[in-house]
Image 1 (spheres, helix red, strand yellow):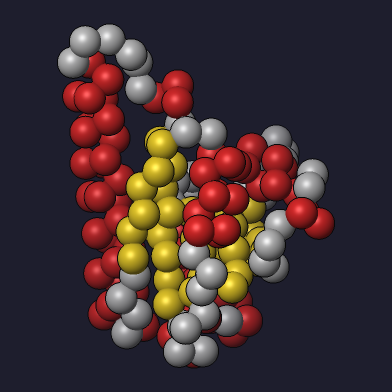
Image 2 (spheres, rainbow, N blue to C red; image 1 turned 135 degrees about the horizontal axis):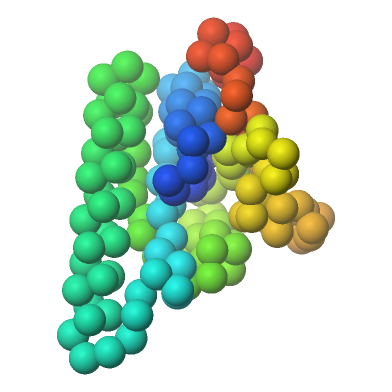
Length: 151
């Protein structure tokens, strides 16, 4: 089964990327892998503190994931898979793609703001030819109607 890999973060454009991945998976009998990455600077190291911060980050991710997962199941008939990784976002994203041979498309939300598409998108686009799968960029300000029409 071909899977769509989508990144779950706290950016506004994440919502459109999630929707697109679920709609495409539903229409093509594929799956969705939702990847959330805890960056190294989000975890302070110290006795007991790092584990507590890691658990809080995982709880926040799981809570946010449940909202998207419920929508994917109820409206698209897709059962997503959650993967939580810790480390450099770009490196963890590439590791996830290479560790799961069923991932066929990477779906990323792109910010429409004046600061560019976002740090992860900007970093990956610098070496797009080295990616092992196609990338679909979803504009963060794309309307729901347009999103449904193109998926």
